[in-house]
Image 1 (spheres, rainbow, N blue to C red):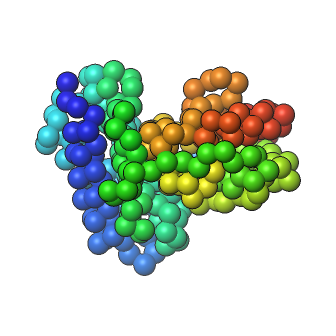
Image 2 (spheres, rainbow, N blue to C red; image 1 turned 180 degrees about the vertical axis):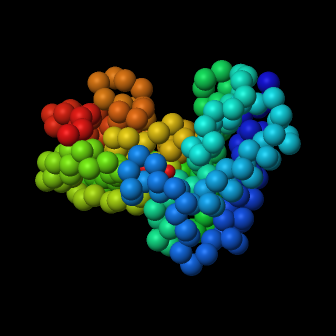
Length: 264
Ligand code: LIP
């Protein structure tokens, strides 16, 4: 089987190429061509074009691999599967805000072994290989440790449906008095890499899909952070929670008191 580091090298090459294409082709105001789960959950033609480019490159070098992409769904079968979000943070991409990313992860037999998050507007390529650490370019990343909840800078995010946002707003209002402050970047992939780089101390959000957190999650765990859901469950759309051990448990227990896994 190909080594994790080789998958990471390949994913980084493809993520860079997709990023260059997006930067070159992004108009001043990308046109929305479709909406998904709500009128504010948008897709642009460039989301699709980037995913098509990524799929084509994967097919060229690894024609037998499976692919799961946000726009094109699941294709192929096999022990190796590529998890692709061509533009994580699409609303940021439309508005011209700096936190949108090409996110590519590689799974072998169901385990993520490689992850790359290219935060294109920032020119920052985060990468990780299972057991090989987390990197920003050539700099090794380590998440912040020993931060108490009361001193924690916490990133979070909100869904596209009103019922979900109502509850997320309630939960956030209750979290705020217990932490240092909150940041809302608009991309789960970028948020998880921010945990890895120590730019925030923790991240939690109800809703990110596998393609949103697969690559960034490996970057965060290879930087020493814990990644999971509520009540011992693995990370998933119900809840994505990430922080260094210690703070993870403190934030988990705080959130658990607010029953965050519900929608109005
Ligand atoms: C985004 C997530 C982000 C969340 C946004 C959105 P998308 O993904 O990365 O964490 O808060 O609402 O879901 O839709 O840009 O791929």
